[in-house]
Image (cartoon, rainbow, N blue to C red):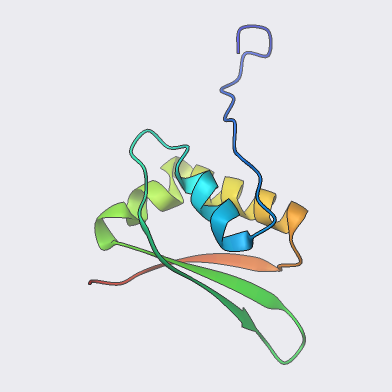
Length: 92
């Protein structure tokens, strides 16, 4: 951190997409509870991951100025055959 002058998050990799997304969301100071992870494929073969979190965790899942959702998208798109990531909320 001192040499790079940046915050560094260490995230455990998993070949299982659901587990990997949960690992990313556990790096935040206040861990985000994932209710559901759904993969939808459109007619044009585009895959979208829909991450459902509690309404009170939505802000943390998106992050300040979208920083968390950007991090999730960047990592998921890099390691998995996915085209988009969406944060959704649902009351239990």
